[in-house]
Length: 180
Image (cartoon, rainbow, N blue to C red; front, side, top):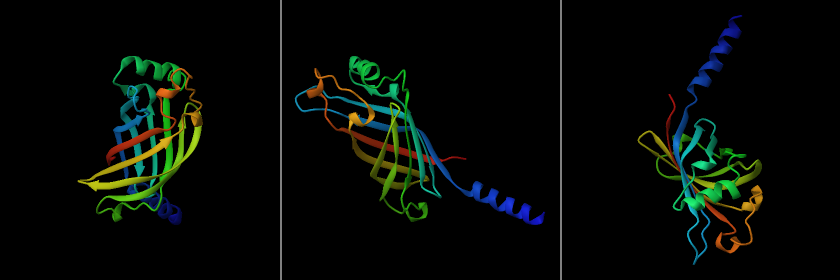
């Protein structure tokens, strides 16, 4: 019986000592602009992200209709015609920051990030680099990568195909604080 109690206490202490960092105001942006045409870009400043600092596991979720465009009509077309945000309201990512150790961050460092991105019910493996900085008890994560709309079943009508880039540039900027 004593062994079970000691083992239980050890497991609980491991669970409670694991630090989690999070944000609900992470910035996710995309640009799909082509030169000589109106900019196709939007930002979402309500991405929720959780990072387990002991394992490097990371999860993110955002609402598609929270992307803000400069032109309201472009935002309407994005949600109704391209992303079907009523049917697929969220995008999510689950992955792992490779070789991550919070104790090794004394300046900005780059780490490989691997995981699965889900958009419109389709999943795609993502491998990119993540820049991490620790500043005043805040973890700052930044990354840039490209996506192909076809990978997620996003159809671009031929009438506007030349006005939208074939590869979408994604930029992430998340400032995370310890969850207490």
